[in-house]
Image (cartoon, rainbow, N blue to C red; front, side, top):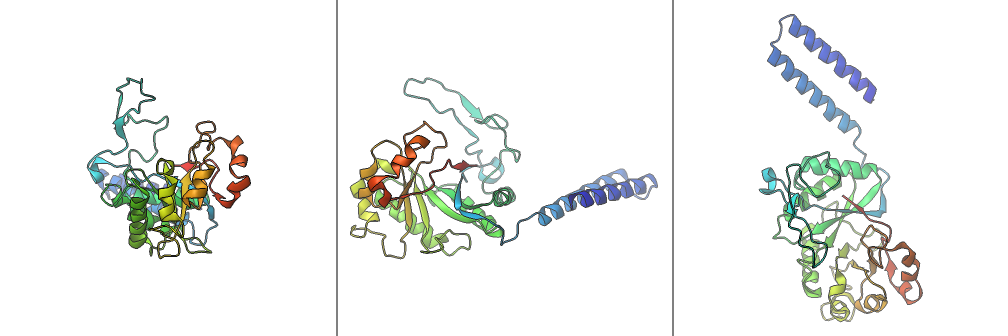
Length: 305
């Protein structure tokens, strides 16, 4: 298909050039028509290569998708492109700054440029790439309804629906101040987006899925008030019941997960040795003994975009 389309493009460009030589079109008209035809050809090619809604996606594969990038044109600021260099420790006195516009904190520069996560054309491109990789579920960043990233959530959901991808949420510390504020955020997300075609629900239980970043900073007994059936603010057996996954970081956190009521745990960090939980040699131990009462979910190295 690609070879035929490229052949057609070459023929059409030659015809336009011939008409220019014959004086039928001005130089500006010829260039304009070549551009229009070329863009139509690209759009046709993208349409042909768009995955069908019944494509083979793995709904056990979760990709953490960060929808916090901004551009001046769409968001007013180059969010997450321009920022201070993170200090390595308390003694680090570095004051470097990534200014964006080509100077970003990454070894590789994105092919799409310093994009906005609220740019529907960029998000559609990402969804197409993710679907092509066979990934069925994305965990997007949730920073609350008052954060600038809120405007990107529906853009991501709508694009994901076109490729049969499902969306769940990772709740970040800025709104995860207590177990009770986390409950509020989960309830809001479900009420706002729960009926969307792309909203993730477990195929067997119909429960949504939430990852709670740095869950360990809140006492397990407080989590139990939300995540166990006997809790004072329980979500269990209610309209907002969900699979809630906590973050396992250090050794001997078994008691935390057994007490708190989390449905499972994840290790997040894609670097063996960075934490106890992300170290592959410890995974078998994490899922042994009493820990088998908790689901050891998503323990493979996460894919981050």
